[in-house]
Image 1 (cartoon, rainbow, N blue to C red):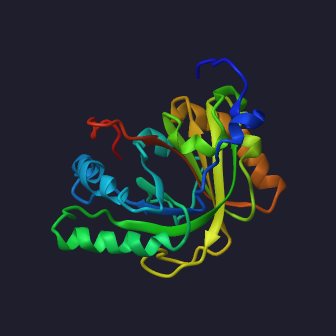
Image 2: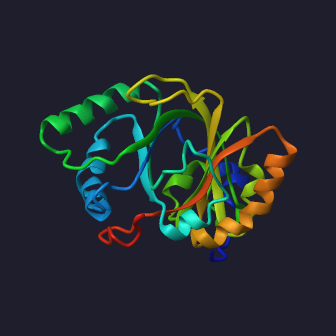
Length: 249
């Protein structure tokens, strides 16, 4: 990651006084690869049609899609049976839980308009509340804006038990972290019980498969010295616009 100049935003009260994120709610959709190998076609449609439409929703602040390549799979520290089949991860960030009703209504309307030509097998859908965030001083930008910071990928942790990302943002290649705890919801927003689960996103400024082994020692210590149980600890690539087949399972 490049060395940038100046005072980090999170150490500058004048910057922080101008505003902060109003995101409270994280919706996640973990999916398998396309059953006919049409992952690139799916990513093209989802990126050019489905995902842009979601941003007409007043309470949506950001969305991003991640892909696990074969190299990403090989670099996983943990993949419990519950999440082992994950090849794709879609994330939406909302201002509050009430946004999910409009989110669902829009999805139904798009399907009825013939705008849903592809489906991926679902691994799990779940809702989390944003509990905390931290940015590495190296990247200068503040924790509030991490989802908009250009990254090379994201390292995702799904764990049972309370944990934060504070101790992980000092790892070289990690720009910062957002984390949150489960919000118990029924279908269609949660496909199985996620009580007690916790999700962490580590936004990466280096190649995801290179950052993964740097994280392993800290993660092993976290899991052996605390009661936190890992269910998924995995690097993912972000998409490259108009290179939809660049990163596929």
